[in-house]
Length: 113
Image (cartoon, rainbow, N blue to C red; front, side, top):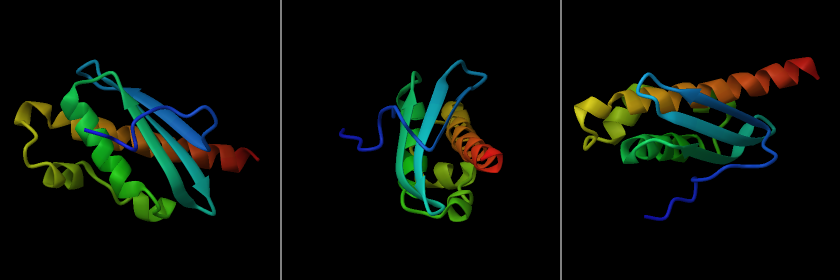
């Protein structure tokens, strides 16, 4: 399946990574202009379910304002992916936490400049 959100960026406005208790690592990269997420990419070394959760978060936040994008929650991801096995529900948390860390990193950079 083609995934327009898959991959890394060399010069994003913000980026973050997080390793979950399962050992999977998720990364998010954002290009932000005028407080709107213009481009989002994610990458993971995790399983297909981790990747599916990353793509779901990326699809939701693309072209949203930062505040609107922060309304994403693990519940939203789980509701969007009813096929996600219960033993992989933590993948939704990993994707959302990593995305939120990227926004936090962006705000820290803005505050420093």
